[in-house]
Length: 398
Image (cartoon, rainbow, N blue to C red):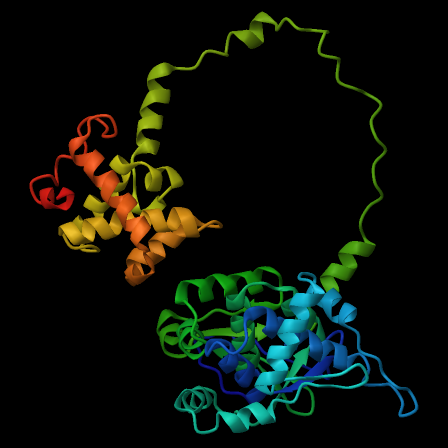
């Protein structure tokens, strides 16, 4: 019988098996794949390929001895949903070299014991094992979450789901779901950002796979959030598909062509004028640079970028030195050139983590030119900006 703290709303369910079946995966196999990912032996796409190989293997578990299975890359690629065959071949090669997978047309093995033997004397591997209690057991992983994680591109979502499986799912004559999980433990064990872990856990709760319980703040700080893995996950999706009402018939009414009703009624045209004073005030407030919401315009405009640096020095995030100011502008050049998907987030990560060694000499030269124009050139400096640091950083133009 499970003993639950009185301030905690218990979440626990027991079923013979999850909806859609499950796969027994060793805890050490999950940790081995993640250790290979954190050490750079494989990438996130290879982890997804290893997860999809679990499903490919499970699909043929009921095949008789007389039936010879056939494993194709097209099936594995269909489970991933993204990528190309050449990319998948490279991922399989890296998994095979690491000892995490054995792939052939007629036989597939997802055993990771060979990799575990190669890293048994590694301190990082030992630390990872000590973070998970009872790491020699097997986890009954639902096949539906296997297919979901195979299509997930987020490394944080995969690591958070692994943490929930390790701490919240057991097999004791049936599948027992329920446990306590701290985001800080997930972040430290799987080497993930704490804020992103919280966001990933909210995503798993939003899709219905994870059910969160209630607890007092003291118990949350000590043991973490009580959660339950929904063993019936996916049933709601099936019901929604069957109960969808028929599509409504298209309306025969059509919009009038452009040459009809060109003139607006006086009633509608009377409200077309905007208040100039209100628009100008809101625009000026929105255009003010802010560290909490850095935009691409802030990175390209030297005046706005200099204001952000001034705010960073006031908050103690950057020192008030000429070298630090040059690094700030050079990091913006680096973010514009290299951060194609999210340059603003790229820039934030650079100055918060101190990744100044990624800046090239060309980017530093561009930053130095912008600083000279900002401090001494009237054409590129907005009125009233760029002079507050001139006395302290005048030597930067030398």
